Image (cartoon, rainbow, N blue to C red; front, side, top):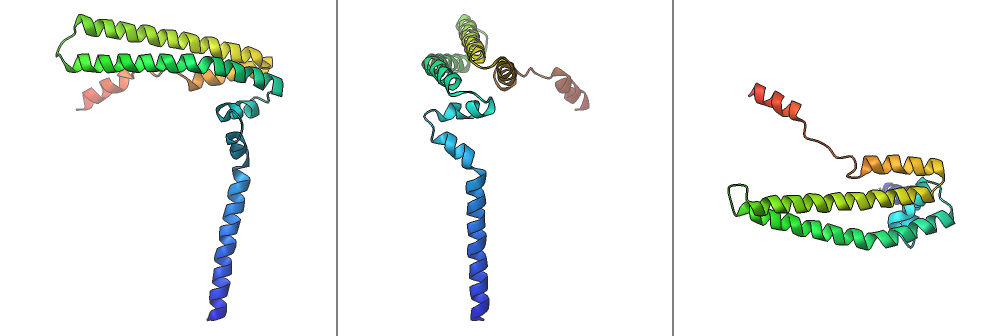
Length: 161
């Protein structure tokens, strides 16, 4: 009985050690990225095979872009809050709501313009093929690839009710 317990305990300890070892092995690269100076960009260096000089330039571009981006996001959030407050205070379209919608749309367009300029600048820092691949990636992963409303599905649902 005691021998069976020892075998079971050793098996359990072995399983835990194997799991921990596989976990460490499987997460080595992301854990290295997290210890880097700019973990939000570490994947970029790996994914696009960037040299240290290319990565340093992209890091510099990123550091210059982030404060402006945060400021725009803050301003858009303020406009969203004002819009929600204005919409909640009435049951019809008002000049104030129209102005807030236009201001928010203009701010979002400015944000997207600046973001795209940044993406182009980053892509030019990379080797040409990697830059093209980067632009294709950001086009799919950012607001440059906005999803529209699917009116066909909404219409089909209306017909089935």
